[in-house]
Length: 310
Image 1: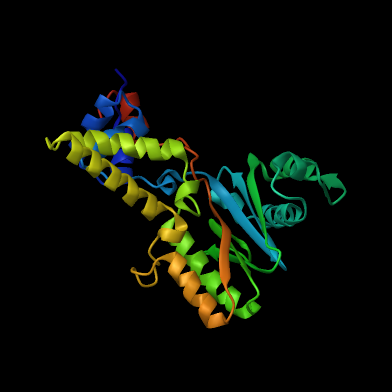
Image 2: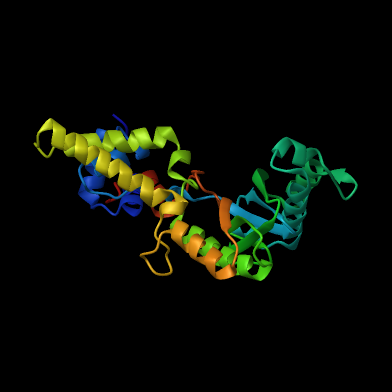
């Protein structure tokens, strides 16, 4: 059986909101596997669905840039937040975002692109040497519309176009640009806050849906209700999950009652031309990356043979 540490219990408590003893038990049942422990808590009704953002750990910056009807977002990671404030690092993120805007999403293509007499990868290698900290170009995404607007938004920007959450919203329409930009800004702020997992329900990852169905099945089975009622409960929970995680069916955070699809439709009527929300990008720094954290007090206690309380 895996050794369940105080740090593991603390981490699960922060992610799940469940009590200390429940988290200890969940980790024991899951043999120390954090995701399995989270699922165990959810089957017992002790935790809500975890957003991927709860696992954010890496440092660095997300960059966004828009030119005309296209925009790009990139994520460049560093080991510490201190480096993210470095002028050389920030300039590199801006340059790489511009490269992605021209060349697209493929990381290998971006790394091989020319930048200041070198390739992007060579500049990155030089930055690692001169700044003295490991850095990685993790991901990039470009959006483009034939007519309309791609609208950028950076939440809590550290510098123009740079921050820890970057969003792009692609709107296809003949409506005036100022109308599209106003709508796009509102939608981008919603996306930053609500963290949709896909544009439409049918775009949600099937593996995630099956995982939700399995959790709902186990939870509903414990109710003791007849099989036909259990089946309806399961499908009801899955349908609710899809609505809450697909952007177009989410409730607008500005009023808490209007579906995003209806917000877009209403904006089109007001602008005098239909507006189609065709795509979006939401990059949150370190999303899905686990980074080992040092607990100095725990390390001292372990070295001295003192058991840390959870």
